[in-house]
Image (cartoon, rainbow, N blue to C red; front, side, top):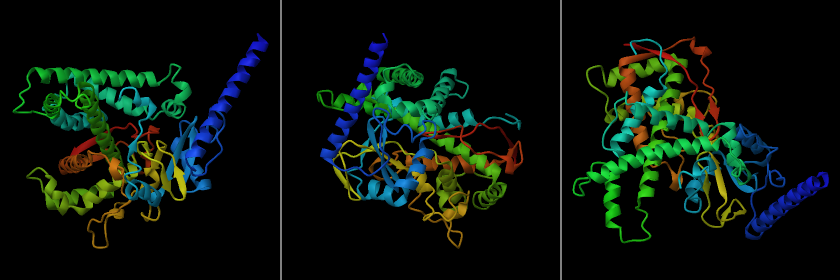
Amino acid sequence: MELAGTVTLFLVIYLSCLVIISAKKKIARKGTLPPGPTPLPLIGNFLQIKSGKILQSLLKLREKYGPVFTVYFGTRPIVVLCGHDAVKEALIDKAEEFSGRKTNPTLERTFQGHEKPFDPTYYLSRAVANVICSIVFGDRFDYKDKEFQSLLEMIYNTFKETSTARAQLYDMYVEVLKYFPGPETKIYNMLDNMRVFIAKRVKENQKTLDPNSPRDFIDCFLIQMEKEKDNPSSEFNIKNLELTTLNLFFGGTETVSSTLRYGFLLLMKYPDVQAKMHEEIDQVIGQNRVPNIEDRSQMPYVDAVIHEVQRVSDLLPMDVPHSVIRDTEFRGYIIPKGTEIYPLLNTVLNDPTKFDTPDAFNPGHFLDEDGRFKKNDAFVPFSSGKRICLGEALARMELFLFFTTILQRFRLKPLQAPQDIDTTPQESGVANIPPLYQLSVIPR
């Protein structure tokens, strides 16, 4: 038995070495990747990258290898881009070449009251989700609807679970871990349950569809499906409808509500900023009408604060994975077709050449000397280039209207001294998950 075990171990190591050597030879034939730490057989750069702290590990490697380098997640080469200049050069200047998309392995299988302190998490999720519901389903859900509450809980937990250390480990070493049961199963199950919910809504729409009077996104998709029913290569099919709707629902709910939760926390930590927002809201809108999106152009300070909330919350610090769609020359290197690209948005949003005090919460980053709003091309919370978030315009409108509507009527009061408020994320991986907290809302 001991001899058999030794032979088995030897074969595993031998085959692993062959896999690494073969992969490196294949890459060498096709191009020259940027430098980086030497990968080990099978496990790649496991020793240099902590599964629960991928971003921090990559930032440390940046200090040694510069703004563009290669790491290996198992046997997969990942090209990492850091800082405004490198990310802009890739996603904007070479937008076509870097327009490919990769999906995190943990998600891939599916995509194919009364002044008392309260936790705002699900209140904000319900409000934001109903904006998407009105677009996708043509109506809204009652906040007390149990099915709706269950759906939002699954969205929140999925968003959170994809950023845990376990999920990050799976994303790095999917080639091996996909053969073993693990935490990714929990994510698959939640996403499948969400898809079942959407499939049910699709069937309801099919029963009452009027091609001459579409009510929502699902109706529009179904109408186009009928038009292209004789086209075997059409992308308009039921599976794509369900997954596209799930993508819109998932992406358009948790990102905005998480930004709002971070924003409330930051406004309680910096009460002087909240007070200045109240002042501008009173001057421009007053108390006798509801805010509208046209007010934004007259409210530079509020606009600047919302931008700074997005910058500091750094919701998707590593962006979503990209890939190059063809062999691509980049800064003297040749990146082979299909190589994964990680544009670290964190390094752009905190680029000291673009922001005077990147480590501080400072709305002045988006104001000129006269107090007018100023744009900054390093403001990329929605990414940039051809894969920029398609919901950017909607998200920006939502954030402005939610912040102004709530602050018009209420003052946000923390349960502790502002200086003691901790903004450290619950989890930091694919996303930065806001910490849980309670607050009081005081009528103004």
